Every structure is written in C-alpha cells, then in structure tokens.
Image 1: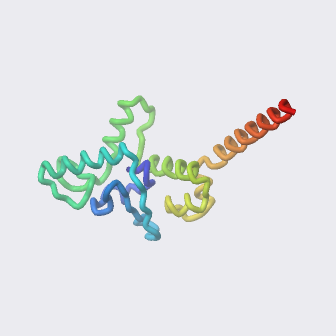
Image 2 (image 1 turned 45 degrees about the horizontal axis):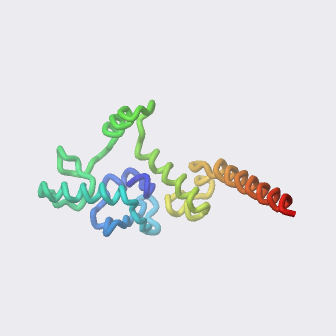
Length: 163
C-alpha cells in the first residue's frame, strides 16, 4: 500500500479499514492534515487486502486497523525487522524501509502525471523543490525529451524519403 499511496509510516501502520472500501484507498497525511486523496488499488493490492480482511475475520479479529501484529493483535509499531528479512530474501544489499516506498511512490506519481504540483500535493511535500529533490523528475523528463526528439527526427526523415 505504501508504494501506491506514498503514505508516511505513521499513517500506514495505523491505516483503518474504514478508509479502504471497494478497492479504493482514502488517505490524508497526518503531518500536513490537508486534502484527502482517493486512489484505486491495483488488482494485486486488492487481492492482498481481501486476504488480509478474510484472515482477520476468520480469526475473529474485528479490528479497526488493517495491519495487525499477529503476536499482539494491535497495529504494528514498526516494520524494520520484517522488511529487513524480506529484503535479504530477495537479495537486496540494503534493507528496504517504508520511507523508501514513500519516495518510490512520489517518483511514480511524478512520472505518470508529469505534474509537479499534483505530485507535491499528493505526497504531501511542502514545496516544488522537495518534489525535484525526492523524485527523479529531471532524469525522466530528459529521457522523455530525448525520446520525443528521436521520434520527431524519425518522422521527419520518413517524410523526406516519401517525397
């Protein structure tokens, strides 16, 4: 969910079920307290959330929070150990963190929308400078510019050949 929403760790760990309805995720940053965002969950996340819901209800854990520590029945307070274990299993040299997911989400939003202001508001960054710092906006915008230039050059050379 962190990759889809870019939620801060503090919001993700206590994510309430009431904010996940029919495959839609509603969230607001507890830090900025600004606008709510609603995101459609991708198919794989919908499937995982359904499994989680079914598992909690099969065990009689009718809890308001989505992510419960199975040992305590309470929301997780941190995910460093599980993320370190998962990172090791997939061969990452450094452990992934929830904060990394936040920045990856910001990068994805910036790439998909191409809109710096939307990315800033969606992720909850305080300025356009933060968007540029934490996303790779310059890199991919240069790649897009280069690809467009190459495509235009190819179209131009095709038109010359047809004449």
